[in-house]
Length: 123
Length: 107
Image (cartoon, rainbow over all chains, first blue to last red; front, side):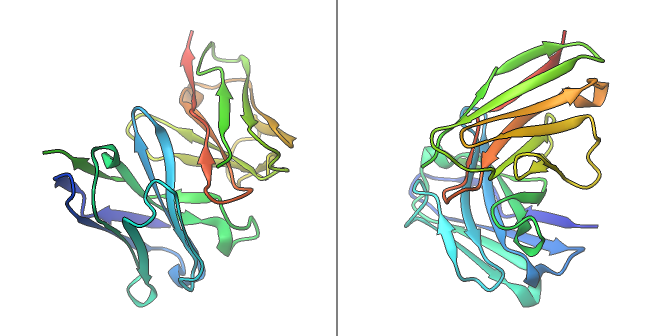
């Protein structure tokens, strides 16, 4: 059974930093690209970053480019999101999400999602 | 970025109804469209890819169609488990983008 478990969310001040982690199990992590997707009540679902199985290529949404960094450690079945220069509008539930690029479906679709971790940016 | 627009934003229906949700892209995305279902407090669930291909395990009452800029998700014979919010998502190009969602509620 595919499982994705996020951690590291919490309260951060504007301008501060947080690092999210995602522990993956139940599949060959090193064969799949991974995404971070966030959700706010006001803006719905927003894709923010993708990393391929080999860590190249990497893509970011314009809203986080230059502030957030996605990375992975295949040996540890782990995905990360380093979030710097946080803003109020980064407040959201952040989902770790498996890409379908390891399947015949191809890249850019999410077939499994974690339960999400809440990030609140507030002074 | 490609903008995805869903309509309606809310849909009231009864068990057994046939419901259709529309998703429009701001430019052609060929058939690179996926659909998801989300229930309150839960992560989205993957339903359909490439506009009309059903993910394994998804009931056959769900179907998708369309290409280019206009797409539909149809639920034939709405079941109690289907009351949820549905999102479309384009994967023609990065940034990946989602529609605003359509909430299917009980009439």
